[in-house]
Length: 202
Image (cartoon, rainbow, N blue to C red; front, top):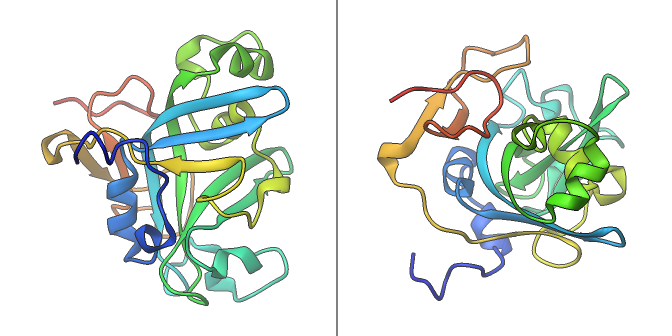
């Protein structure tokens, strides 16, 4: 990627592709959220792909519902949902309208707005600020209010960053789920101290 391309907002065409390809290419991209409390930005280092109605772990496998309507597109929208009634999770919707696939953002390396993140997260080490999907949303101030908004326009955006070489990319089974947990659809930056779960050594 050329220096000129870095920092440009990703358009809908980036997301209107196979979910695994979008997941891989999101590594190294920049997540940015502008709120009244301030701007936060970080480098995406871990994601998981959820493939659609044929993926038992994907919400669209249960069919369309009011809760999951934004999961079904259009591509490039945020799909935000709550787990255990406590934690928000943010996803980037992929593929064509109606399919119901997305990439879950699992961990981000904080770059800008660390003071804002610290205020939101409390007394935790910086390494824990945006490590895990619930912590990430708390640090970035992402809630259900962002469900369905465009990731190309508005306050929550994903921008191109420095690309991650294939040698530094690792695919593993997904974590924190019970169905199709063995599917190798979690992708992360090798040896990054910011990823959730156990780090993957060289």
